[in-house]
Picture 1: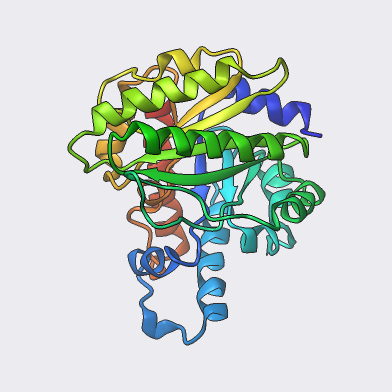
Picture 2: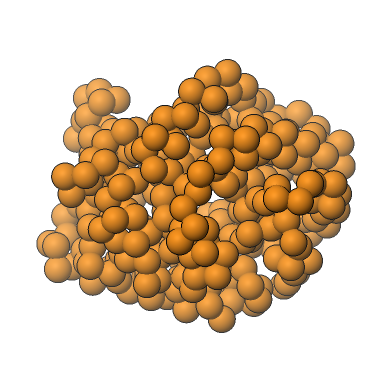
Length: 296
């Protein structure tokens, strides 16, 4: 079962959740932004070695502690590897005071009704058992909304909660992530529908069934205030969704009670070519800015 100290940190701790969970499809881009292009590796194994090196470097930076980074989302291969001579999840909690989460989805289906549902996860129970054994506190899974289509959004929310209950049954805390694409013309309308559908599901939950939500930074400030206050919600976190860090921080600061769970915005400016001092100073500056936006 979830550690009570970890639950307390996720419920009331000040700070944000780092998203260190780039998957196979997004890893080449993440490495390019880190100054490592495709010529630096010749196989998928080498690619994942390089991205793990980046994640381990971030996790071992002096500023990466539970004082400002209250949680971190890991990719499956990161969970299965070590950081600082310890299994990754144990390193995060025991050495850094950072609560470990695991990305569990296997990617997206083709778009239908303006959304992309998650692909089937037939091996989810086995993965969750491994996560529990590794000391993981919770999970994250992503689907995408690309239009204000009520049928599609309802299907996404249905799927997120259905799988979320399977995760809850293993004693893990699910982060549901129905991402709204930030560039769509009807983003505000999509977010209104999303709020209605999520609220409908939350209101129908039994006592003791508690979720976290990871949502795009909303068009209307405090759009999700009612979700933040909902008794079945532990925390509402924001994804950066392609916004540059300064813009993401400015938007986040307008949403009281919402904290960050940034990926690209967190690693912006980091480079494999930086010395340790340069790297540590860059990640410290990023952490400070995201932290301030999260506690505003």
